[in-house]
Image (tube, rainbow, N blue to C red):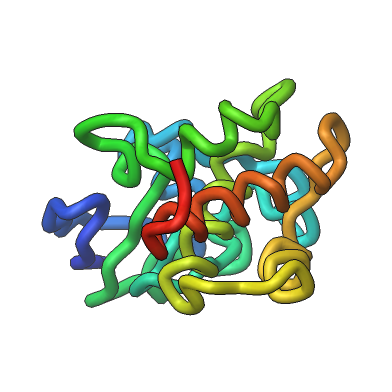
Length: 156
C-alpha cells in the first residue's frame, strides 16, 4: 500500500504494510527515533507527534491514516536550533531521564499553538495523556508557563 504525507516539512511517498503503526513507520522506516514507544496503547504519551498541528499518540494510528497529512516529530521541531519551549524545559529542570521528553514537548507545543495563553488547569489537561515518572509535573508545567509568557512577549 502506498502512502503520501509530509514529515517534518519533507514530502514522503512510499510503500508500507497495511497494519504498520505510525510510530513504527516514523521510527523504523524513517529513522526518527526521538519518539519512543512505551505502552503502545495510548496511555503514556511517549510517542506523541503533531498531526496537522494537533498532538496524537502515534502508536494508536496506522501509518496509512496519516495519508495526506502533515506530521511533526521532535526532530522536526528543533530542526534548525533548539526551540524556546525546549530551552524552557532545560531552564526549569523539566528533563531527567528524557524518555518522556519528546512526547511531552510536542504535547506542550500543540497546546501552545492552539492556546498561546493557557492557565494551569489547561496546561495540566493538555499534558494529561503524557506520563513522567522522574520529574513529576510541576517543573513541566513551569516550563510551559515560561514559554507561554515568552510567546506573549512577557518573559525571558
